[in-house]
Image (cartoon, rainbow, N blue to C red; front, top):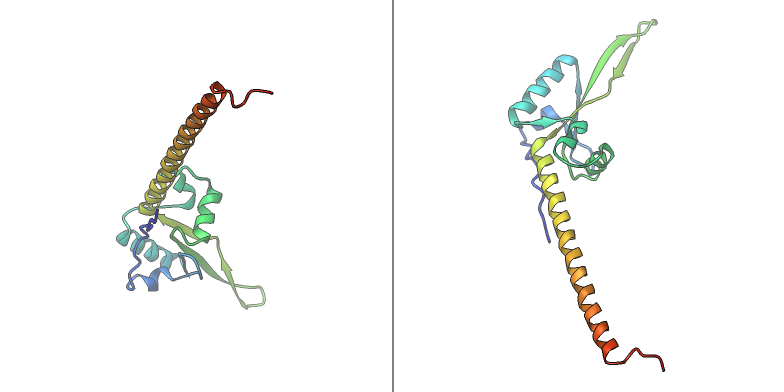
Length: 155
C-alpha cells in the first residue's frame, strides 16, 4: 500500500525565518538572539496552528523520544529548531559566541498523521494474523482428513 505522508507546507516567505533544512531531513534550523527567537516563535505559531516539543509527541503518538528523533533524522517528521546565540567578551576583550541548546517544535498535524499511520499498520498486522490463523485452521483440517483416511498410519 502506497501512502503519502501529509507533511506541512513551508512557504518560501517563511523560509528566511525558519532557516534551511539539514541535508536529507525536514529539520529547519535558525539561530539568533533572544529577541529574534521571539519573532521566530510568533511567525511559526501564525503559520502553523499547533506545535509541540519533541518530548510532547508522545501525547499523540505511542512512541518513545528515541523513535521521534529517529523519524526526524530519517526525514519523516518536520522539526523547527532555533539556537539562541549569545555574544560575550572574554577577559582579553575578544568576542566569544555561545550557542545554547535549541528550542524545537513539531507540527501537531504531523504527529496525528503519524499516529494514524501506526494505527493503519497495526490494523494491517491484525488482518495478517487473522489470515495466518485461518490458514492454520485449514491446514489442520487437511491433516485431520489425511489421518482419517490412513495416510499417516505406521506400517
